[in-house]
Image (tube, rainbow, N blue to C red):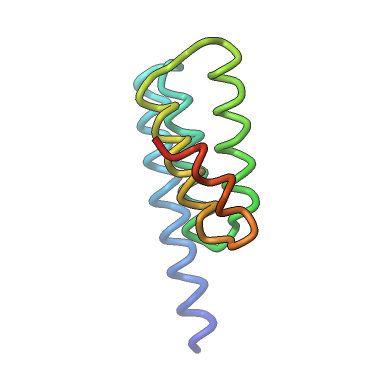
Amino acid sequence: MNQKKEENISQKECAFWFRLGLSYQQMGPANFDRFVILLGLFYASNNKANTAQMLYSEFAMKSEKQGQINYTLVMALNLLGRLLLKDPEQQLDACKYLR
């Protein structure tokens, strides 16, 4: 019974993040970056830190390569830094992302 309840909670969480991402996409393709960040938040909140770290890192590298410095990039770097702080082996790397 508890397992079914946990699955329902997970499905509700997935539906929430999916709808939120769709609302950004409907506003226009310029908001796709925010959707990627939200997807990273979804993975981080569901104990998939490696996937979240990959999404944040890829987005940050792409944005910095294009010379784009905006709120979404700062947010991605901040979230990446906070995620890395949780891992004792990566705490030193975290400091360079936190701004």
